[in-house]
Length: 412
Ligand SMILES: [Zn+2]
Image (tube, rainbow, N blue to C red; front, side):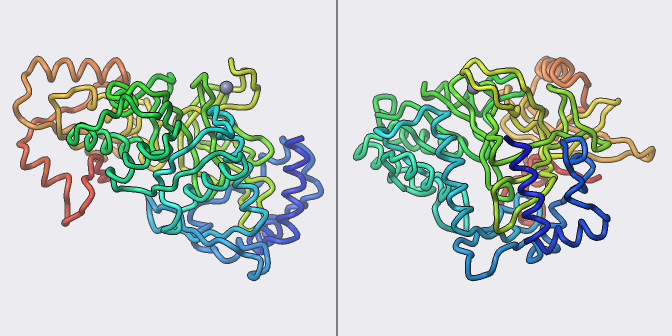
């Protein structure tokens, strides 16, 4: 079934996408000869730079058919423009409808959306459309404004809250300060967006643990991006984000562009299915993760993706081991004494990656030893730990008047 959809999508690209028409012509690719997954894996990769540089060439429908214009969040680099027609909005609705079903949301439930529906974001709108399709109750409180969130919960008694996990911590802090008895509210579960809440072993990571300690509600992780206009969502078993095979074809590739084995980390490359306005073929997401095809305990047998372990561009090679800033961060977050730190990546004169973790003075030597042992056991390598003053860390975190603290600084 997925293959037929994929074949249909290839024909669509050849007929309607100026960008892929050029790619197929320049690479002498005859779409009619692509008749298996084996043939498919030789098709060229589309990069984020391609999508940025040839942005308008990706538009495959007449301009008058476009309904919604959005941009990517631009976490790394400039935001990219994307557009959707009516069919794409329906596809988005179907994707979220299925995602909500995975998380157990029912028609009679009320859901609080604390992500914005405007500001050119896709996610908030996608949630809204999915809940409309499901027929559930919706409260659109938008982002920020902790007081409004608690007021919405008090008034409309939602069972689910859709939230960025770090923002959830902020509204919990607000509740504690204002003596709001949040543990007694109607909320039973949070559907997390934007940040991973689990480790590759499917246990809650430090962010997830902090939420769970404060508030014992069920935590669902999701993985999505604007470019792929698709979300992968956890079911009640919480062991990987389920793929919706009729909407997207994911591949996980190693450094040589070959398919990885289940459980092996590689870059996620996606081909959107049934998308019309700006369909993408073998789009390299830059996100490193693994997959499993074993049937899930929930009874579904769709492929599942692990949480993202890091960004491809941020990969560090230390003594033959690939590690990501996120895993170093995870270790550091387990030490409540280490409030502030900076991770620096440099390259030595032999061209080898080096990592220095700068922690503030005040830690005992014993604690440093424990930290080093944790690095060794969790990352399989020891790191260079340097003790500096608190002021120095603050200066390093905010270079050139940057407003967001930079915990990972890459000088390579
Ligand atoms: Zn499942």
